[in-house]
Image 1 (cartoon, rainbow over the protein chains, first blue to last red):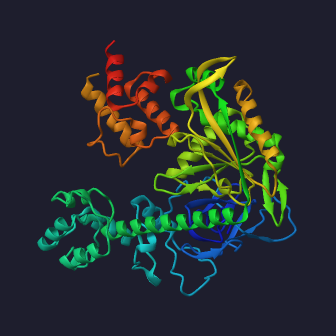
Image 2 (cartoon, chains in turn green, blue):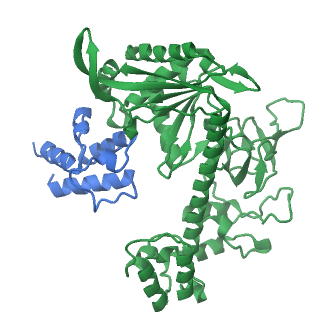
Length: 459
Length: 82
């Protein structure tokens, strides 16, 4: 189990994307792991053949636990036969569904514990994924309680057929503003009864303002069985709570341990804006650059110039990082933060930074990040410009020693050659760890960012 | 393009970017970015999708002017009628 963030000490294996016998390569995505913050795709760190999957889907294991074993492939002439894998292996062509018929027999790996339910076949898992059904919530009818394809089709069928609701239940739901699609029915055939509504109202089921007679129709198109939806919602609530806890722990540690000092400066972005406007005229609409890309690029290059701020404070000493791995702190629509990393960002040109930023932002919010994208950054950036604030006085992510903040880029009065002009300005701030550096070092970083932003054509 | 067509196009595109957007209560002059908490990347995507749908390239300066529903509808209608 790889560490997918400084604050992670265990993870849940959600899904294997490889099977024993598959050849895997370094960098392949082999499994999906759930952390307190999000589902993350885990990449393999070596070439080889999957020998055994040690951990079953649903199992929670500590960071460092063996997930799977790899046999070295014939090609790689290593002396030892098998290598334990902290992370496990994906199939070569990522999740290209290889359509087996009814999988003849699941290659069962060494059963790890008697309490672990039998894992559904890959075919079933794929079908569940297509139907949006969380397998953990399905009671299997197969041998050993394994979920079969029939179970899924049954559930899906039930989901699209109208739920039966007793007249009293319907009236109660309407009065209480309960969304019938979120209520699990306990009557015969899953019918929703009055008691179910009463239970839902006391349990604090999410309410809708429009609990009208249309509700069952809306349900019909939702594609989820009622009990599936509540499970999903509960999972989302749990995830939000976990995310909050994990941010709370990390930020408390930061404020407890790190003596922060703060610096700020205002930077004229006139040249960046003009240059970017020029470039954007030639770019396809969807690839247009936004000022944040220049701010990130400049920060990465400045961090390379001031290595004392690029690294980690571990065991009472500063350890400089080899590369500038820039952490991009992103707020999620659902609440909470993720901080994916732009590896070696100081070596990228601005269009690469723009593309990475777009990709990471999109996947952090809608899909999944890969484990390597959640590795420890060497310095982080918090860009709150889109939130319309003027400046950010950030809290450092330990064990990093610096966090650069950007406020909104806004036209403001600015003295140029003894005259007053209106320029697009941004306030750049630095929060830095006083154990590792003094303010004079921090000042060099901010000055470097300013200087670099005055020659955008070099980015 | 009629104003109604422009509105429908905008609403469809907005819903793609903000699936839970409540467009029924949106004031015609309200700032789209503020209302739906669109960041600059979201806005680039919105303009990109609109460009594709409308069948012409929306330049950055014009995009900057499409801050509200009304402003965007006016722009789309004006641009396609000329």
